[in-house]
Image (cartoon, rainbow, N blue to C red):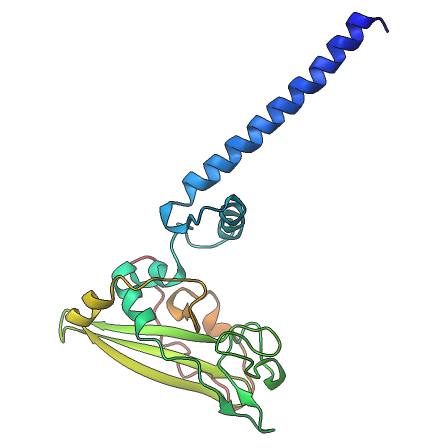
Length: 214
């Protein structure tokens, strides 16, 4: 191969590398724009990670948190603000059992409290939510927090919010890091088909109406 051919081949490789670099930068910029300003924290890696996690969620749009998807932003703020803090209950062996996501933990051993955020098995403290919206009649919204503790069963904590309270709490930050994690039953696929052991039957089964971004 003569010198001219070698130089031409080297230039082709460099050109391909520049094109690839430009494509990667363009993808990163698109990811930052697509997730919206609420989720940007100045970290490109965090933005891309959020976009990857968000891409498989249903229903869209992916820039909304689960509470907003189910209830709208104003009511979501009130539901987060009024959420009961994680509390443990004594299990059958004396363990301190906290509320967890039943889809990921069904044994007392994975629900032993390590902190307000996590169990000793690295499970998030969790509460499920549902609402009864009586704003057109009574002017209030009843919020139910359903807490599942393996081997203990379900506990319901109820809050009532009127228009003034909802407006006051509307701006509550909706952070992934807030404890406990809140999972709206209204958007939980397959919720009524989940099988539970005797004594753990969910009181909400077949009583929660699905809702998507109302």
